[in-house]
Length: 253
Image (spheres, rainbow, N blue to C red):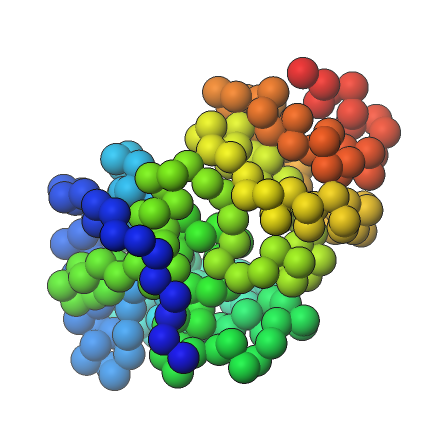
């Protein structure tokens, strides 16, 4: 099944970022070992917004062991996270890079229909993103831009939504609800109506998914340029009602 493509919008702006030659160099190591490497997530979203990214999330078909070896040989260091996906990080000069092995939405969302998977595992990994604005990718070597799920369209139209059904993603990863509010507060974007409906239906699930990521997202909301927008989303969808009572007075705007 071919990836769904959005309407034509201006593609990625011209990028002049010092990380690009670093990633080009690293990608040749991966290519020589028979692996693919791409930059995606917040970095490509920042490029679409005309910003310089600070975090660099890479994806590859190399497994964690191979990535550890490649990063250590190249950068002289590597660290694997303790979560179930085993993200491998390395520091190279001023840049901290993280590499995640390809997964599919089935690894994140048990309700995801496997018939919707694509033949290309890279496209399946991009489907795992919580926000479509984070699904654009630069493929290395060559920094070739691909946008199978409309990241540039959603940045241009200032909309927040997942690349797959929110009634699948939100119950599968409830902390995403707070991330939607965070990005609305930070970017001034609107949350798609079907996402708001899914948040309202599954608001109670946030009580079972409170962790440091939720705390970080809430902190970013209250320090964002539009905190009232983020809090209005949590309040209107009743997500706020299921956060700890002692937190709520600090979240009123």
